[in-house]
Image: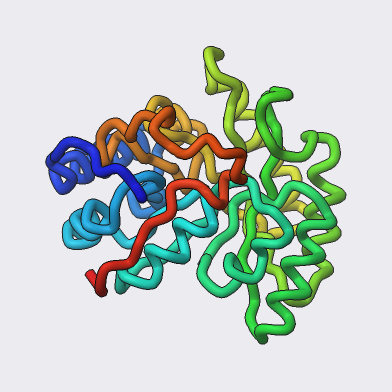
Length: 252
């Protein structure tokens, strides 16, 4: 079960994040409305997520399929983003729940998503994840492979590739990585004008990401406070999609 953090002023922290996003957008001659804040709620109980929803937050992100689907069953009025590494055997639940999948990084995964979305009679919105920082510890396709993957996905009737996502390597200046992704997006738009979004920037660097063109930022601890100690999670060899389940206890 998810471990609840110490009480924090979720509404106040959320307002502060939106204010900082707005200021960063104005510094780069953009409107605050051009940036969507995704509140990354992994590891937090539905009651904590509900506090952010009550404060006006609509977009929430999850890294684990099981946790996302469990919360979706007890929270109303939420637009879910799946931002974690996706296993093919979890595609059905993601298509049934997620408004936007940020982490499509290979053609095989795109094909499975397209098949499931087609069977469900829906158009699944996705982003192609790019390893723009060439970090072996991060997911995503190589930057040189991204145009081919985007082109292939754009040919799939049940998928809508709307942009790119990246995570920079830890401990480095993220600005060049974000700028590289923005340039890739701009190049791709010459052939694929629908590729508009840049999902980049987290709690520690989202202002830099906005200055470099992010249209989506993914903020967790900046809104909800420190996450539970990961050492408290089960260590029985379960996959990440099987850890930290949230037990529904009535609609919130």
